Image (cartoon, rainbow, N blue to C red; front, side, top):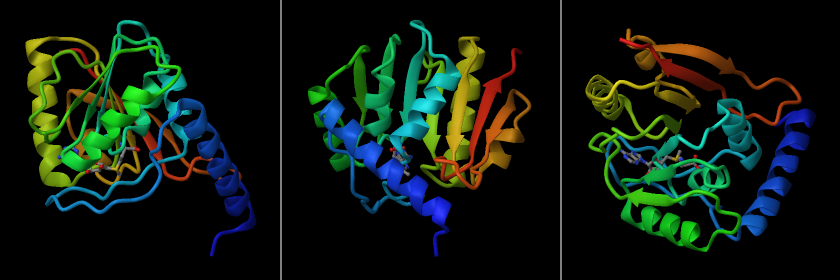
Length: 206
Ligand SMILES: C[S@@+](CC[C@H](N)C(=O)[O-])C[C@H]1O[C@@H](n2cnc3c(N)ncnc32)[C@H](O)[C@@H]1O
């Protein structure tokens, strides 16, 4: 059973989520199960959490932001309210990807170009990406491939890659890589609007 502070903060999050859905003119609510092996079901965090993450990253006009497993595009649309070079949504499920495209096409207050890739995050070309966001989207097999992909991309095009991983159940796999370091951890407290831990990583220059 939820405690009183949890009920209050969840209600506040829900009210704010409805406000932001109306303000941006998008529909990202509702869960959806995934049919793909090693994929987590569609789910989301509160708008408040994503805005806090992007504010913490202090996104710059040179940043290219990618949401790995973008679902219906909530994070993509939020990132696109910042003045960045590009926002990319990567989603393995064609139906979710189509809904994300619809949302991005009709969103209000967009300040950045947006594009989508309907494919596995394991196979995406990350050469332009400087900031990655993930809400525990897949299992260890996929994450292993994604990490190898990031490393090759950083070797081919050295740059700083920042990674924000919410509900970091496989955080130890990332922390175990010598070329990336854990910089900051957020943990939910009693009256926090944050409902899952969030880890911030940064690639280490070779
Ligand atoms: C927990 S949801 C997160 C949705 C969205 N990022 C958000 O925070 O609102 C995880 C999403 O990852 C997608 N996914 C799972 N495995 C994937 C993969 N290998 N490549 C791309 N997307 C994947 C799922 O279909 C699902 O939509």
